[in-house]
Image (cartoon, rainbow, N blue to C red; front, side, top):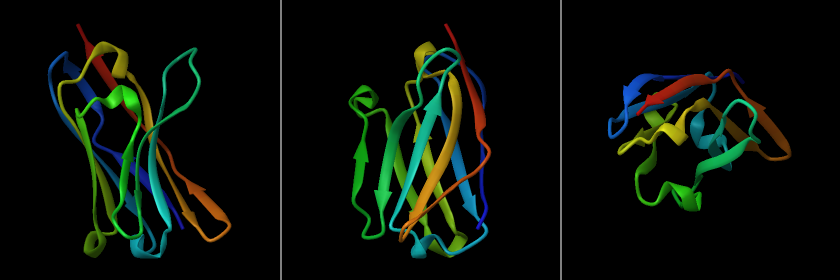
Amino acid sequence: VQLQASGGGMVQAGGSLRLSCISSGSIASFNIVSWFRQAPGKQREMVATITSDGTVDYADFIQGRFTISRDVAKNTVYLQMSSLRPEDTGDYFCKARRGAGWYMGQGTQVTVSS
């Protein structure tokens, strides 16, 4: 299974982006799909998670600005990001769990200017 993140780019503070995590296999087969991010010099942090039953969870710092969703027919998990802040800058990537196995793909860069 391969995961590929896309949709990153450069935006000004307050702007929006929608990231996509496309799986080469069925999204429905994953127990959990999460978005993570990592900024230069900082630790990797979980941003949002969606489970196979559609339960979602967000990091506290999101404060209602992001929405994770999935389209099973397209094997894609989305991260809609609004009210972006400079501190949201980083490499965003998705990670998925199926049983005991984890899968992670290449990230997409998000840069937010002030």
